[in-house]
Length: 577
Image (cartoon, rainbow, N blue to C red; front, side, top):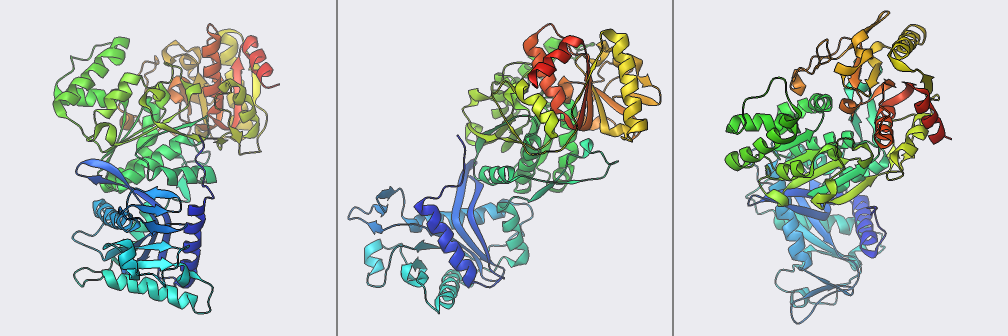
């Protein structure tokens, strides 16, 4: 189901109130609409929201609840807006919002210690005229007529802006008891940054073509809308095809949560992706102390060692260690150590076993009532079937491929099997190269020629190229060769024989600028490079082949080269025609 802004009577009323007040108030008043947040209440996360928040550095915060249509309270004390019964009075809703908002602000580490800001609430009934009514009798003891913005105040009038400003200032005065003070400019800025999503995020640093330079990547309207939507949602699954920005949004969400004071775990499957997540969140993690980045197995080993629930690590490490021993050790560690986090963000969730996802929930203080986001793409599930659906999370789709040049997008779209048919944002790019090579010797020679052309002829920086193999490095003839003329393949997580060194993500060294990264397709999931060369893809399982091709090809932002047997060339050609 797509979550889009609606144009209902209530939405139009909120927009009308906002537009009138914005036009009436001078710039020092900040107005925020459709504000949502999460706040901890006795150890449990719950949602907070307000239709409108008016802020001023000296006057404080004012939350406004907007109700459209005829408003009435019957003899039983029940409230109605139009034909719909309300679960609480509008005044109670507004009061809950204002108290919850202040509690949220006090949770944020950057909030000034001991500051209890002036804060209050009001209601707006744009379709109701209260001039001839006794609001106290009509609406009960919690209704103060001076806190009601009605149709008469909003009616066209040369003095309307003056009246609206006087109403706002009167509301602030009613809530200023003298015991509290305004939030100041810093407090207003903190609220604004908390409830508005950034218009731009830094690009993924390890995937840029310029030598170490950062490039600004502007989020699409779709991504911005989703990031805003998720601000008031505790549990969600974000599903999208390759290139739709899932990792960028996972990073942004984890940063938001940590900045707001949530002890947050950002977790993924692959160590190379964990290194990228670590690098991109390092500033927030250091500043707040509320953010950890781990792979699932690294997390299991860390907690298992802390709780003494793991046997000695085998040498060499076996598949059973990863598939059984570490997950069981994590479950035992959680029982012994208890929960650690208020929020967990999972990237590349299709790689996680359903039992692992259930184990992660055990790390949350509030269990299934706490904050959990899973970002996933079923078409990239090569280790096991995507089991995210077992969590029962509401799904939010991402539809636009913002990474790949148009010809690359056209190639990968059929490989997604139609389940995640994304739309291309980009229109640039050259056609992918399909180079036929049968066997190891032809593959190695073809790679030598390609790397020489890319670097020496076309001027591509070696660090902008990734060579991806469908095999593990220890089984790769391409990795065994290592040197291709002046170009050298590099992987800081493996030894010369291609065996993984078992390094934690943050301990993998930075690549030198003059080397070409070589990695397995499986371990490069979630990452990208301007230029990707993929090769050595196994052909024994057609379904697995298509998924490997989809993952490998979608890693390329600007140009893609495949060095594969004729049968695979034909497969790719057939799919793209």
